[in-house]
Length: 163
Image 1: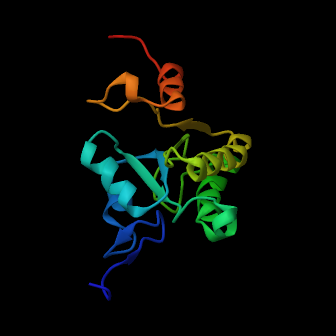
Image 2: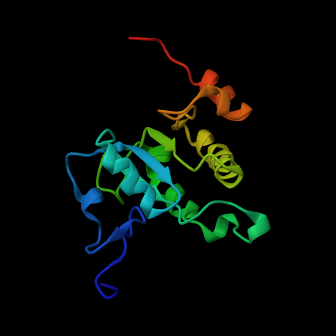
Protein backbone atom coordinates (compact mmCIF):
# COMPACT_ATOMS: atom_id res chain seq x y z
CA UNK A 1 0.00 0.00 0.00
CA UNK A 2 2.82 2.39 0.88
CA UNK A 3 4.25 2.00 -2.62
CA UNK A 4 0.92 2.61 -4.40
CA UNK A 5 -0.63 5.45 -2.37
CA UNK A 6 0.67 9.01 -2.66
CA UNK A 7 -0.72 12.55 -2.67
CA UNK A 8 -2.63 13.90 -5.68
CA UNK A 9 -0.60 16.65 -7.37
CA UNK A 10 -3.76 18.74 -7.87
CA UNK A 11 -5.76 18.52 -4.64
CA UNK A 12 -3.35 16.90 -2.16
CA UNK A 13 -5.71 14.04 -1.27
CA UNK A 14 -4.57 10.42 -0.99
CA UNK A 15 -4.48 8.77 -4.40
CA UNK A 16 -3.31 5.69 -6.26
CA UNK A 17 -3.28 7.57 -9.57
CA UNK A 18 -2.30 11.13 -10.36
CA UNK A 19 -4.48 13.13 -10.56
CA UNK A 20 -6.85 11.38 -8.17
CA UNK A 21 -10.27 10.03 -9.13
CA UNK A 22 -12.05 13.08 -7.66
CA UNK A 23 -9.95 15.52 -9.70
CA UNK A 24 -10.46 13.46 -12.88
CA UNK A 25 -14.24 13.08 -12.42
CA UNK A 26 -15.92 15.10 -15.21
CA UNK A 27 -19.19 15.10 -13.24
CA UNK A 28 -17.71 17.34 -10.55
CA UNK A 29 -18.06 21.12 -10.59
CA UNK A 30 -14.52 22.44 -10.96
CA UNK A 31 -15.65 25.99 -10.33
CA UNK A 32 -16.21 25.29 -6.61
CA UNK A 33 -13.29 24.17 -4.43
CA UNK A 34 -13.67 23.04 -0.82
CA UNK A 35 -10.50 23.67 1.20
CA UNK A 36 -9.93 21.19 4.03
CA UNK A 37 -7.11 20.51 6.46
CA UNK A 38 -6.53 16.76 6.01
CA UNK A 39 -7.39 13.95 3.56
CA UNK A 40 -9.77 12.48 6.14
CA UNK A 41 -11.86 15.63 5.85
CA UNK A 42 -12.44 14.86 2.16
CA UNK A 43 -13.81 11.46 3.16
CA UNK A 44 -16.16 13.09 5.67
CA UNK A 45 -17.61 15.40 2.99
CA UNK A 46 -17.83 12.58 0.46
CA UNK A 47 -19.84 10.45 2.91
CA UNK A 48 -22.55 13.15 2.92
CA UNK A 49 -23.03 12.80 -0.83
CA UNK A 50 -23.94 16.49 -1.00
CA UNK A 51 -20.79 18.15 -2.32
CA UNK A 52 -20.07 17.76 -6.04
CA UNK A 53 -17.20 20.22 -6.41
CA UNK A 54 -13.46 19.67 -6.09
CA UNK A 55 -11.19 19.72 -3.05
CA UNK A 56 -7.92 21.20 -1.90
CA UNK A 57 -6.15 19.57 1.07
CA UNK A 58 -3.86 21.93 3.00
CA UNK A 59 -2.06 19.25 4.98
CA UNK A 60 -2.75 20.91 8.33
CA UNK A 61 -3.72 24.22 9.90
CA UNK A 62 -1.78 27.31 10.89
CA UNK A 63 -0.45 27.06 14.42
CA UNK A 64 2.67 29.14 15.07
CA UNK A 65 2.84 27.85 18.65
CA UNK A 66 3.06 24.29 17.32
CA UNK A 67 5.49 25.34 14.58
CA UNK A 68 3.07 25.17 11.63
CA UNK A 69 3.53 28.20 9.36
CA UNK A 70 1.97 29.08 5.96
CA UNK A 71 4.92 27.81 3.94
CA UNK A 72 4.47 24.33 5.46
CA UNK A 73 0.92 24.01 4.15
CA UNK A 74 -0.33 23.67 0.56
CA UNK A 75 -1.40 27.31 0.45
CA UNK A 76 0.87 28.21 -2.47
CA UNK A 77 -0.60 25.31 -4.48
CA UNK A 78 -4.09 26.71 -3.82
CA UNK A 79 -3.03 30.16 -4.98
CA UNK A 80 -1.53 28.64 -8.13
CA UNK A 81 -4.86 26.97 -8.85
CA UNK A 82 -6.51 30.38 -8.45
CA UNK A 83 -4.15 32.61 -10.41
CA UNK A 84 -5.20 31.60 -13.92
CA UNK A 85 -8.86 32.24 -13.11
CA UNK A 86 -8.21 35.53 -11.33
CA UNK A 87 -5.83 36.92 -13.94
CA UNK A 88 -7.37 35.71 -17.16
CA UNK A 89 -10.65 33.94 -16.50
CA UNK A 90 -9.04 30.83 -17.99
CA UNK A 91 -10.02 27.43 -16.66
CA UNK A 92 -8.19 25.91 -13.70
CA UNK A 93 -5.64 24.04 -15.78
CA UNK A 94 -4.41 22.01 -12.82
CA UNK A 95 -7.83 20.48 -12.21
CA UNK A 96 -8.86 20.44 -15.87
CA UNK A 97 -12.11 22.29 -15.23
CA UNK A 98 -13.77 25.69 -15.40
CA UNK A 99 -12.39 28.80 -13.73
CA UNK A 100 -12.73 28.67 -9.95
CA UNK A 101 -15.52 31.01 -8.83
CA UNK A 102 -15.98 29.92 -5.19
CA UNK A 103 -13.70 28.70 -2.42
CA UNK A 104 -15.39 27.04 0.56
CA UNK A 105 -13.22 27.23 3.68
CA UNK A 106 -13.93 24.02 5.58
CA UNK A 107 -11.22 24.10 8.21
CA UNK A 108 -11.96 22.80 11.70
CA UNK A 109 -13.87 25.04 14.14
CA UNK A 110 -10.95 25.45 16.54
CA UNK A 111 -8.34 28.17 17.04
CA UNK A 112 -5.96 26.82 14.38
CA UNK A 113 -8.76 26.20 11.87
CA UNK A 114 -10.24 29.66 12.39
CA UNK A 115 -6.80 31.27 12.03
CA UNK A 116 -6.22 29.33 8.82
CA UNK A 117 -9.61 30.34 7.40
CA UNK A 118 -8.96 34.00 8.23
CA UNK A 119 -5.48 33.88 6.69
CA UNK A 120 -6.79 32.23 3.50
CA UNK A 121 -9.68 34.67 3.17
CA UNK A 122 -7.24 37.60 3.29
CA UNK A 123 -5.28 36.01 0.43
CA UNK A 124 -8.23 34.88 -1.70
CA UNK A 125 -10.74 37.75 -1.54
CA UNK A 126 -8.43 40.17 -3.42
CA UNK A 127 -8.29 37.61 -6.26
CA UNK A 128 -11.97 38.29 -6.97
CA UNK A 129 -13.26 34.86 -6.01
CA UNK A 130 -16.25 34.25 -3.74
CA UNK A 131 -14.97 32.98 -0.37
CA UNK A 132 -17.42 31.21 1.94
CA UNK A 133 -17.09 29.41 5.28
CA UNK A 134 -18.96 26.26 6.27
CA UNK A 135 -21.74 26.85 8.78
CA UNK A 136 -21.19 25.97 12.40
CA UNK A 137 -23.69 25.41 15.13
CA UNK A 138 -25.50 23.04 17.42
CA UNK A 139 -24.99 19.35 16.52
CA UNK A 140 -28.01 17.16 15.82
CA UNK A 141 -29.17 15.24 18.88
CA UNK A 142 -27.65 17.60 21.44
CA UNK A 143 -29.32 19.80 24.06
CA UNK A 144 -29.04 23.59 23.91
CA UNK A 145 -28.40 23.87 27.64
CA UNK A 146 -25.11 21.95 27.20
CA UNK A 147 -23.86 23.99 24.22
CA UNK A 148 -21.09 26.51 24.78
CA UNK A 149 -21.61 30.22 24.14
CA UNK A 150 -19.52 30.33 20.96
CA UNK A 151 -21.44 27.43 19.41
CA UNK A 152 -24.80 29.01 20.20
CA UNK A 153 -23.61 32.38 18.89
CA UNK A 154 -22.42 30.81 15.62
CA UNK A 155 -25.69 28.90 15.30
CA UNK A 156 -27.57 32.19 15.50
CA UNK A 157 -25.24 33.86 12.97
CA UNK A 158 -25.67 31.00 10.49
CA UNK A 159 -29.44 30.76 10.72
CA UNK A 160 -31.48 30.58 7.51
CA UNK A 161 -35.07 30.75 6.31
CA UNK A 162 -37.32 27.78 7.06
CA UNK A 163 -38.43 26.23 3.79
